[in-house]
Image 1 (cartoon, rainbow, N blue to C red):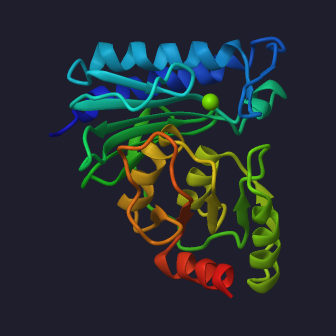
Image 2: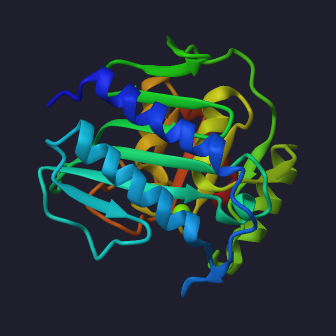
Length: 261
Ligand SMILES: [Mg+2]
């Protein structure tokens, strides 16, 4: 199954426009969800608009798995896995490092992402399986080339639902690999690893929509997106087992080694 690149471009451009204009939204009201994370009206708005775009340009996608509307793993041939706003707290604070993420994932136990877009206020990316990653430069989509150098930083996922052992693990990795740490929401972390802004990120609380787009982008550029134990990511699950995103399998293995030591 192949997703038309032109259609994906239109979806990403529409979401990028919305992201740029959303900075005008005045202090949205924050609500705390059951899992301790934040949500505001813009989360729903961005998710609804993402799904509207998918249905408009990719009518072959038959099911939605959205952060704000999910009701278990949908049964469908092609699923749109949508995080309207990843990094809601950053959005509410008026920062520009929140992301909109749309992954197109085949259904069933053998399912996997086949396309996706990830958009921030200042940058937009898209990917299709086997076709690499593209980045929006001005009004044109250019082939994305992963930079050779990366900032020596570990990205972390501290949140209200992180297990207690997580902070100890982060300290350990930071100390043993001699890397500073920087907190990042999932999609932003994926994009930072892709663009050389961080080396790795791991999480115990990631969901399908946090990874669907960026995992494929990382895979397509020789980076790593897999379970923390080395298994492939199970794309038929909403709540993911522990996962790691890393610049290379060598980096992922180094992190694992420290975690096991
Ligand atoms: Mg969200």
